[in-house]
Image 1 (spheres, rainbow, N blue to C red):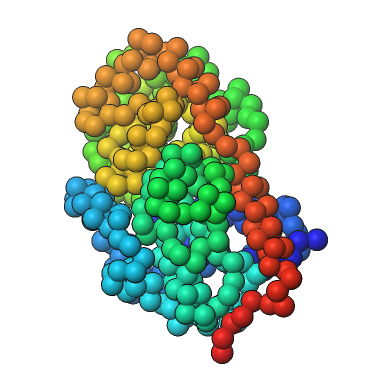
Image 2: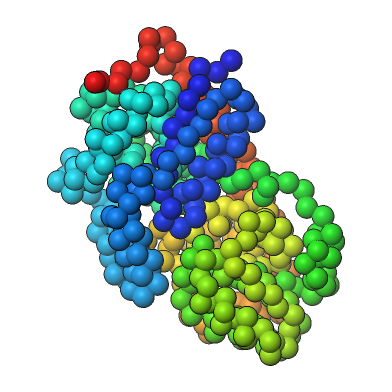
Length: 388
C-alpha cells in the first residue's frame, strides 16, 4: 500500500487548464490508490479572493485587448531568478494561510498545477517551516522562471523540449519527468464516430470544424471567422464552443439563423471530448490543456492568434511536431481552411498520424505513480515537520 495517504493539489482558475490538470491527476490517483485522500485548492481564490478577482480581470482583458502587453510582461518575467525581490514578494503571497493549511491538513505530498503556490511552498521549505515533498506540473510546452523553485522535488513536463530548457536552467535531470500534460481519462477512450455523428446530428461524409475559443472565449475576432464558416463556399459543418463567453454565444446564435452550412453553437461543454473525437479539424488558440486534449484524440489543429508568451511557445512546439498549422491573421485562416478541408485533405490524415507519436496517453497515471513514489521514499522519516 502506498504511503501517500493525503495529497494536496494547489491550482488556480486562470483559464481551465490548471484546474483540469488537477482533476485528471486526482482521478488517476483515486483509481490507482483508492485509500488516498486528495484535496484540490484554488490557491489564489483561497488566500486572497479580492486580489484573485482583480488578477483574473486583468489577465482576461490583457489577453483579449492587449495581448502584446501581456506578451511583454510574460517575456520580462521569464528570467526572474528565485532570489529576486519580485520573486520573494510573490513567494510571500498568502504564505501564512499556506502554512496554516499545511499544518492542519498534514499532506504527504504537495502538488502544484499553478506556479505561484509552488513558490510559496518552496519558500516555506527554505525557511524550515515545512518539510514536505513538493512537485509541480508545468501545464504548457514553455519554460518560464515562475515555475522553477529551489525546493521543488519533482517537475512534470509536457515534452523533451521543456526538459532541455529546464536542464539549461540548472534543474537536476532526475527531478524532471517528461510525462506529458495530464488530461482526463474521457479523452483517452475509444470513440464510436458513427454514433457520435448521430448524437450531434452530423453528416459523417462532410468535414467537421470545431471552433474552441478557450474557456472564456477570448480568441480575438473569432466571431467573424465563425460567420464566414457558416457561409463557407465548400461543404463543411461547424461546431462552436463559446465557453463562458455569453456575449459571443448570443451573437453566434443569431448568425446561425442565416447560416448556409450546418452549424451549432454551445456555451460551456462538459463532454467536449466527444466533440473533439467527432471533429476533423479544430480551430483554437494554443492553451496547454486544450492542445493536450486534442492530441489525445488525434485531432489536427489550426492555431489562431495564440496569446504571446506560453501559447506562442505551445504553438511552435505543435507546428514543429507536424500536428498543427498556425494562422496569424484571418487571411491565413482562410488559406489553411481551404488547404486542409478542400485542396489537400490528406494532410489531416498525416497530422493525425503524427499526433499519435506526440501524445502521451498515460500522463496522469505516470504522475500519480511518481507522487506515490515520492511519499514512499520519505516513509522512513517519522513525519514531515510542520513548525507551530
